[in-house]
Length: 112
Image 1: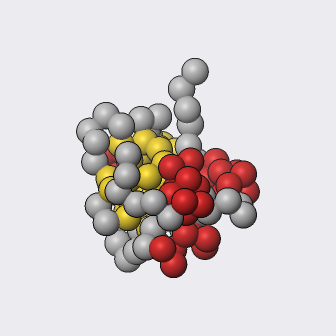
Image 2: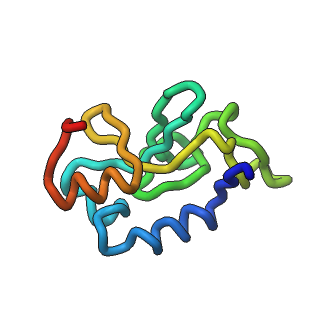
């Protein structure tokens, strides 16, 4: 079954990872920024508002057109491609939420 990511999905993920280091508010001070990884292309896209300014949390608004699967009648992204996952970027490296939790817990960065 294809994974569908919406703003609601992102909110559920944040609730699931709260108090673990897997949300923006808890790992920002260590240099993590909310981002998305397209598993098909390998490209990392930092989370941004519709106008392109960096967003402090995960939001679908600033993702490139090619990653959006469905938009509202007003053009706002509703869902993104199933190949796109939410996570974080730090010093050019993408971390899944799970990897961010481990990195924050162990303060290990750049170690595979």
